[in-house]
Image 1 (cartoon, rainbow, N blue to C red):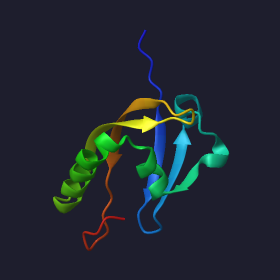
Image 2: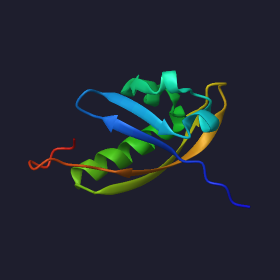
Image 3: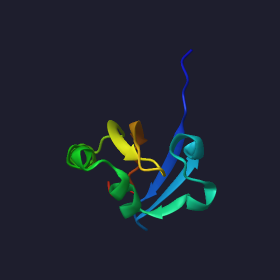
Length: 100
């Protein structure tokens, strides 16, 4: 059987906040009370070896005004283990072409 566990997040770039929703608790052990974080929280939990590549992918996507990007990286769970995350993001820009 093939199982899918989806966890959703919204990155509020203007306020530098990450909001987690969906199945985040069963995937990574983080509960509802831990669902709103500064963006540094996400960066601190991404495996250091994966950060540079993923940051480069994201910056290129914004520069080229991509509407979607796909990335993968290891993310630290609440118990300190890393799980592989397949991240599919939708990028939204305002009328001036600035990422919102």
